[in-house]
Amino acid sequence: MISLLARLFLKPEGRDEAALRKGYGILCGAVGIGLNVLLFAGKFFAGTLSGSIAITADAFNNLSDAGSSFVTLLGFQLAGQKPDSDHPFGHGRIEYLSGLAVAMLIILMGFELAKSSLDKILHPAPVDSSWLVIAILCVSICVKLYMSFYNRSLGKKLNAPAMLATAADSLSDSVATTAVLIATLVGRFSGLMIDGWCGILVAAFILWSGFNAAKDTVNPLLGTPPTHEFVNQIKELVMAHPGIIGIHDLIVHDYGPGRVMISLHAEVSASENVLELHDEIDNVESELREKLGCEAVIHMDPIVTDDGVTEETRERVAALVHCIDDAINIHDFRMVAGPSHTNVIFDAVVPYGFRLTDSEVEEKIKTAVRTLDGNYFAVVKVERSYT
Image 1: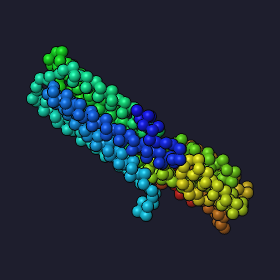
Image 2 (image 1 turned 135 degrees about the horizontal axis):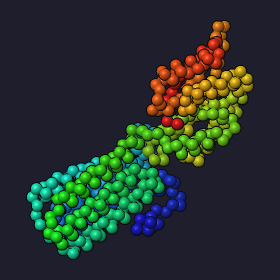
Image 3 (image 1 turned 135 degrees about the vertical axis):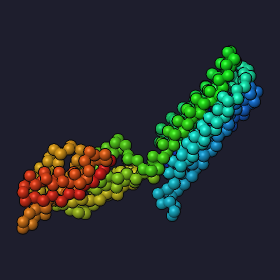
Image 4 (image 1 turned 30 degrees about the horizontal axis):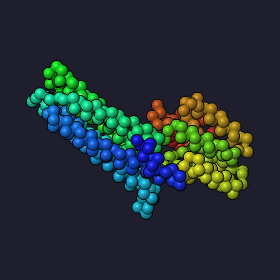
């Protein structure tokens, strides 16, 4: 159904990626509202007919899902707004906020269902289960599985946390309704009143799904490192240019899906023409924008490449540093000779969670450099990096 509606209302011709993304988000939100309202009406009727607290609670769960779909729709609508003076990097993170709102609604519904189920356990009552009630529950399970499938599929395709949160909600709803159906069938054929106990199990599953959905939306709001694949794409693209000798200090700034900025330092030969190097850097920035869809700011770091002593010393220092740990890398290497000693100046990069503290790394490197030459004094700045 989503594919058919997309073909009817979302013409990809003439639409950029952001507009198409917004269109899919609004379409899925609108479909979710309609289907959840229908499910609420059917389950509320079934719950009233049977007297089942689990079915009635499941009905109101679907009503809250309609609200979640509205939040998702509103989130995509607001996230698609153009940058303005108050938000120069756009409004893309609203998608994360809408996903968080959906997660909070899931958790709230889990608590409400647990409360109602506990009351049912303390005050059990027989459930009247007709074949009409069973048929309504079966249809509801199928509809929710379909909603989970299309939201997850599009959520992964568009990298949309709000859609993925809705997909998790729909899957939890299908499991919840399955448990309600089992309780209804058990009550019909055995007379056992397990309605409340099934409701407790369903509530626990809903709470777990809500927690995971909240974690998936909070993490990008707080800031998470880019994927290794994306980092490697950047490195391969930049290093493909002959004027670039090396890169470091790569930082990825995520302002929401499709709104990524990166900054990095590119090492270039100090003996090359600065205007030609600047033009090369401009070309790299343009290529990053065109191929990876991200705005880039690149700082040039000139390094000496035609001084045999400096280059040889850099290689020997790098080898000594790797003897301490292969995870440590150096950059911005230069040598400043004085009357009594030579300062060997460079930055050392270690990953987050490294086994040694910054001061321990610094001391080990200084000791290693002194063993290389007693007149060498290492001036080291230790950095932490996710790359």
